[in-house]
Length: 246
Image 1 (cartoon, one colour):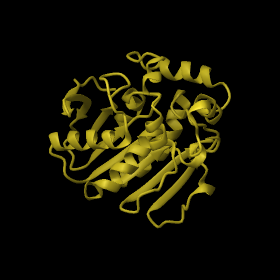
Image 2: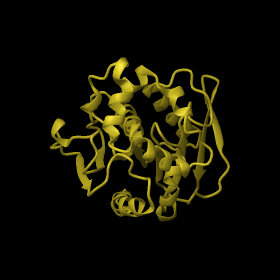
Image 3: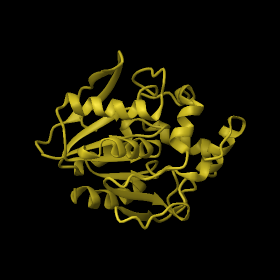
Image 4: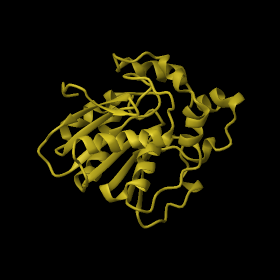
């Protein structure tokens, strides 16, 4: 990741941190990480991106506390960031995992700003019926075999994150928001990229025949799309194709 200082805005007196990379473009790409990650997961993609870049740090995971980590609060965080940078249009959202739910909710509410949303490993109906007692079990089952080994590998690339801090975000309302049945917005183009082994997203469960949705599956990848370098290279091929067409 380029060594850019973090900028800050505020949402109801709570700080919201992000990085801004100015590539002197009329287009801006906003990267939104997921529940088990930080914006560091996108660092290997940035050398390919010619547009302006915003890397959002979701509150409550690393950089600041979040007393109410709900989907709409994160949507407003992104709006405040765009307002501060005076970005009103030509935005492409790139979300990963829970970040896809945030991206989709933002595109629904502020569609006039968005060209498209690219969703990497989104979640949908798998966890609709989730209950408080089996929440951990469902998450581990959904993320597949070797969950804790993958988690260790996943967080080892993020030097600034505690592997256990994530449990502070185990808020049932947030999980209902993010992992509930996703209704994809019809207000902008949606590109869905997910692995063939990803049990959090089953295209049979949703209507992918909507004219604004493009869906591609990447062979032999599960929900942890960014763990290894080879995987990053595979995803880059798909991601950059859709970014360049912004």
